[in-house]
Length: 350
Ligand code: COI
Image (cartoon, rainbow, N blue to C red; front, top):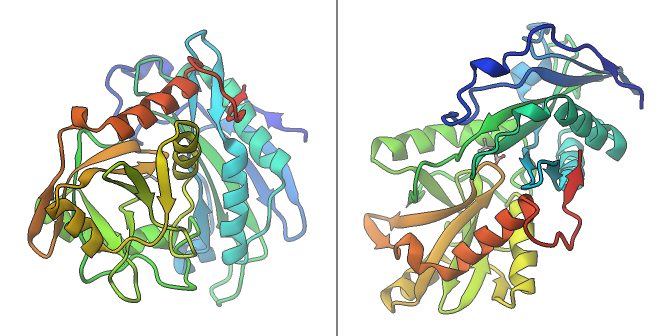
């Protein structure tokens, strides 16, 4: 693939305070763009980060034909820039695209687009512990047409942002006992923009009550735990790590998958199965709920401080008393910074 490259004449990097970066508000110098003309992906290019010009009639704006991904680049301790599992994001992006009648993208274009962009802006990868370069690939429909049908043309864009942590501390969640995030045979498994828009109003209400995030139950029985905000969920009951099975309503998180693989390597007892909120409560009441945490690209591993369901609050142990999430977090961090063997070849070299 031949990528046309137009570099910025003036980098903005010196304007950034790398010790104090808010999540998602600082953008690196360049972006990658490629267009789908109805038949092929054409004109891949890297150009200075700037506004996009689109017709006001594109169906992405009206009907939500829009999908995205999130992944991160890290700096190894030896200075090398590496990207965490871009192939896994490519696979998921194509699943999301299929669900919204959008075109498939070949692996080389997706991964090479990310790699070249990160290569050009590699000085934007923060060095500070807990910081990284967040990479945001997304695709949206660009036909200028107000009727409802899948667009014929699309644009795929990637930009990057140096980021610190997504949450400032441990997370207090409220179990949503009215609104749901997903339902069987819907779009829960896909990273479609509309899933996130639909969660905003319930989250706003929960924030007004002092919570950081919602914990979503299944949309059919309102009984089984699914996700929390933008994260997959894990619980430790006794000495067993449990995460809900991803069978269509749950996003198949890449951090979730990585945590499951590492848990196996670390010989942590693991179960992937349905887990009812009542079971979590029962475990809590018997003193068996040792840990609960969310996983996601932005959040990495975020320990839950409390879970509140119908006014009843479960207060979880302090961070230092959670050996399983601490060990998993540390192991993942060591891989991302080249401090331990990358036995799955997760860290793509830039
Ligand atoms: C992620 O990349 O983890 C997301 O789902 C989006 C994020 C900004 C919360």
